[in-house]
Image (cartoon, rainbow over all chains, first blue to last red; front, side):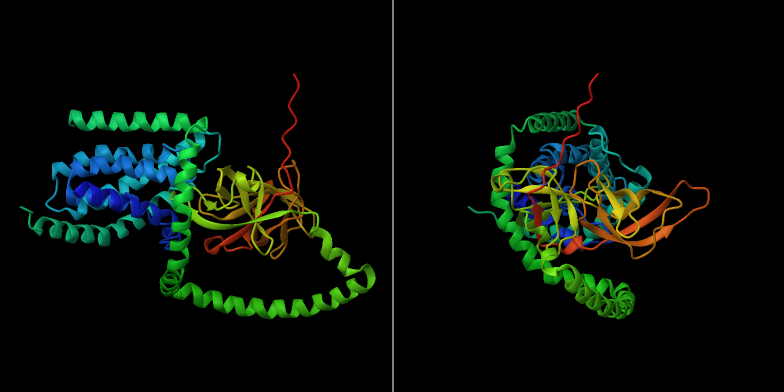
Length: 166
Length: 276
């Protein structure tokens, strides 16, 4: 059941990302609701569910974005490795590692897209991309993470308190 | 790191690479067509429903910028009103001398396909929008896309059956041969990572000034000539530089595009094959 809710949340996030998020720009960039949702879900709900949701999100995003199918999945794949950091519990807080992971995942995602552009023979201005895309996008996603994290946390508490049938 | 995590990571990367390989030969296009056919109406609905909310929030956060913009627009309005008066006179003269009605029919030979914008690529690295017309409607790659008012928006970069992706002129991979309308100075209008437009390869001595209109030159055969791209908003002549830095403002507001026109009557010419 939790997986079904997670998949539904991912689908809503992907559609919202391509349809709505471009209208809500922060620092001149659009926040990536999919990355934010995956990180928040990983931190609140645990790595088991996140490991399933990450490839599903990548595949779905690939179906609806302008890039070849598989690229979004590849760009989100490093999040799988990041689930390990969630388990390490380096600091006594959930939100701080979540912010760090969100920023790292954003940089990796945008960087993967840029590398594939270069591999396809397009010219990319690296320094300008870092200052005008990567850094603002990482900050914008970190800001969006805070409300998304609390929403999932509240929702997750409700899920745990629900009485079992039978 | 747990073996299971690494294995799962390897599996997902492998699956991604397989999907990428399959995409290269258009093996998965039917699946993408089906997904976009289902998602496009939902995305269109969401876009139009949330637009007023987005406008409201953006207006609150942009209050300072809007205030400055309002002041400069007021000045611009005054200038344009004066210019409009002069142009009205000039138009009257033109009508008398050359027959204005004949000029108005200049685009009669052009065919357009109207399309709605329903999505934007999620990556900030790319400036790409999705439109609800595809190969079924006669859309092909490299066709020029215009705003409803007639200024250049971008080029069709990927076509599916009932949808297509348009790379905006502001995308960092976009480059269009262009010229300044008044002085006929040639250059290349290129996008950038931060979404601004620059006219490159404009010689240091060339006559370029703020407010000049920038049009497609048609050089190279990729685009028709004479299509309006934007206007010059900044010219930087650095000493001892071969070229000027010319910043161009697109006329259309790409963040608010809802409808576009695809110029379907112009077919981009393929470059001549080089003979050994």
